[in-house]
Length: 464
Image (cartoon, rainbow, N blue to C red; front, side):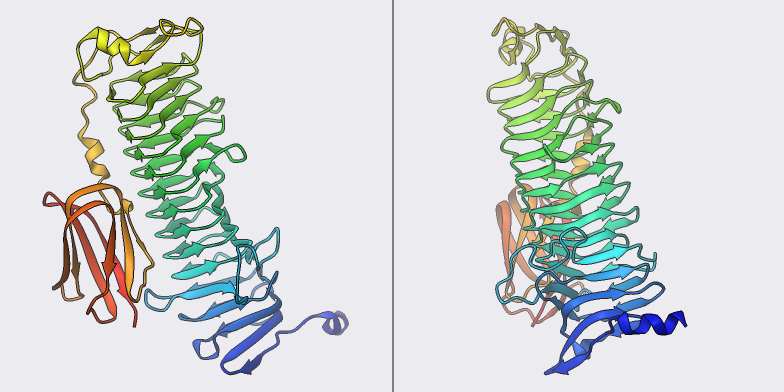
C-alpha cells in the first residue's frame, strides 16, 4: 500500500528527443545509460539517481545543464568513463555561460551524495558549475575549467592526471587524498584546504594563490616532486603545521614562495628543494626545518619570525635584498650554511638583523659549510610533472608550458609507430606554441629535451 501512496508524488525521468537532443529531469529509478546517439542531454530540471541505481554515460556524450540545475547521485553510482579521443562533457546550456551558472549553491553540479564506490570519472570535462563535482572519488584524466570550484571535498582515492584551470577555486578540501601528475593553474585559488593529502609530481602554476591563504588551511600535506611556480603566492600555510615539501621547485612566485605560520600540530619541513626568483622565498613563523635547499635570486631568501627554526646545509646566495631577514627580537643561529663566499663580511651584508635594526635579534652564521648543501636529488625534479599542454585534445594549435625557463631545448613529436613527424629546435623561455601544420588527426607523443637530457614526455591528441 505504501508503494501506491508514493507513486503520485515521485517525479519521473522525462525523455524528449528533438534533433538528437534529449531533455532529462526528475528521478532515475533503474539503471540507465545515456548514449552518444541521444547526446546532448539537457538537464531542464534537477535529476536524482536513486539508491542502488547506476547511471552510465557513454564516451563522447555532452550533458548540458539549465541554470541552477544539477545531478544528484543519491547512494547510487555514476559511471562516466570517456576516452582520450571521446571525452564526456558536463557544462552549461547557456549561450553565454559564467562560472557558477549551473549546479546547486551548496551541493554543486554533480553531487555524489553517499555515492557507491562504483562511481568513476575518466576523461571528463566539467565547466561553469558552482562546484563541478562534490564528494568525488575515482577520477583521472579529467579537466575542470571556469567553475566557481572545480572539485569540492576529495575522498581518499587517487586523483590522477587531472587539470584545473580558470576556476575561482581549483579544489576545495583535500583530505587524505592522493594527487598524482595533476596541473592546477590560472585559478584565483588553486587549493583551498589541505589536510593529510599526498601530492606527487603536481604542477601549481600561475594562480593568484596556489595553496591556503587567509580562509584556507594547509596542514599535514606531503608534497613530493611538485612545481609551485609563477603564482602570486605559492603555499601559505595558515598556522597549523605538519607539512613536508621534498624535491620541489618553488620558483617565480611574485609575493612569496612559502609562508609557514604557527605549527601546533608539528614542525613544517622543506628538504631538497629549489627556491628561486620569488619575492620572499620562505617565511618562517615556527620551528620549521629547512635543509639541503637551493635558495637563490629571491628578493629576500628567508624571513625569520621565530628563532626555533632549524636551518642548515642550504645554499643561500645571490638574493636581491637579503639572504636572511630577521623579524623577531630574539637571537638566531643559522650556522652550517653556504653563502657563496667565505668572507664573513660579505655574509653579514646578506643578513638583516640587529646590526641593521636594533629592534631585531642578532644572527650567528659561523661556521660556514661549503659542501653539505650539495644534493643531486634536486636534479631528479626534471620529470613529466612540469609540462602542461592546453588544450589537449586540440585541432589547430596547443600551448606547451614547462615549469622553468628552457635554454636551447628541443621538442619532438612522434606518431604511434615511433616515427618523428615534427621537431621544434632552439626553444628558449617556458612556453612553446605547438601548431598542427600538416599532421592528420590522431594520438601522438611529444618529447622535450635540453642538453641531450630528457625533461618530459607526454601524449597529445589532434582532432579533425
